[in-house]
Structures are given as structure tokens and as C-alpha cells.
Amino acid sequence: MTEPTSPSRHLAALTAAFLQSARPLQILGWLMCAAAVAGALFAALHGLRCAGILFALALMSGLPLAWYVLRIRFDVAAFELIAQYTDAADTLADFDAALCQLGLRQKADPRDLVQRACASRTLVYRLATVVCGQLIFVLIGMGTLYA
Image 1 (cartoon, rainbow, N blue to C red):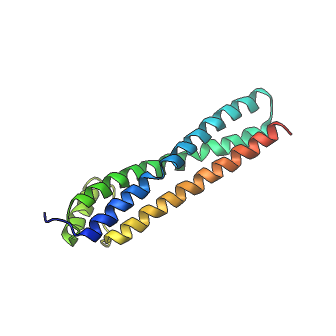
Image 2: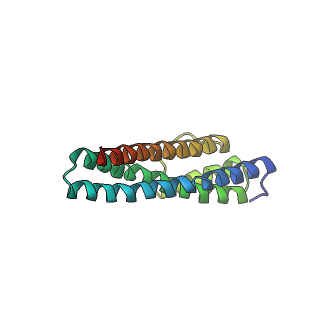
Image 3: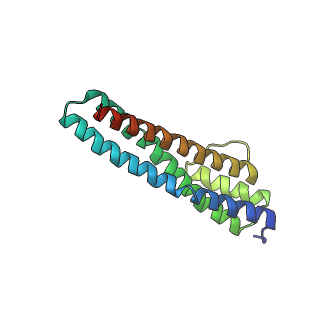
């Protein structure tokens, strides 16, 4: 493989760095799950049904959280690999073929590096939305505990 051009190397490296910067959001999401478990147990012990439902909703938000965390971690590794190699169309095509062989991508139109970076950025926005939802559920649930 040939040496990558600077713009594509920088785009891949910066995308990986941006995705890694979502780590505090991931940690906050897991902390919200832990708070939801504690709150749900407390609500169940004291017969507070409304609070229990809110904490259960926060806990169920942990499922998409886990998916986005997994996808973001995979994309970090993928962009770090892409940053090491060429930006030629055949390299991205080879990458897509490997994803298809693993069952991680369906046959589709090839995407360039910019499209891949934008799609990965969308994952971070979705993760932030899930964590904000969890935070809202936990805060309202805590408020109902003391109401």
C-alpha cells in the first residue's frame, strides 16, 4: 500500500480523536445506569411506582447506550487503521469488503472518508442524546422520590 496523503491521514486521525473524546459521555451514561439501578431498588423497596418507572426507563436507555459505545470504540480503531494506510479508493473498498465478510456491513455503495467521518460523528450525537435522556429520567425519578 502507498503512503497516505496528508489530508486523508489527518481526517482519519482527527475523526478517531473526536470519537475518543466521547469517552466522558460513555462514562456518564454508565453512571446513569448505575444510578438508575440504585434508584429503582430504592423505589421498589418503598413502593414508589412512578419513580420506579422513571428509573426503569433510564436503565432501558442503557441498551442503545451499549450499542453506541460499541460502535464508537470500533470506529476509533477503524479510523486509526485507516490513518495508517492510503486513502486510495481500493483501500476503502478493501475495508468495506472485509466488513462484509465479517457481516458488519451489507453490500452498498462505497463511501469516501468524509462520508464515513460524518457518519461516525452522528454516532456521538446519538450517544449524547441517549445520555441526556438518561439524565432527565434519573433526575425526574430522584425528584419524585422526595416529592
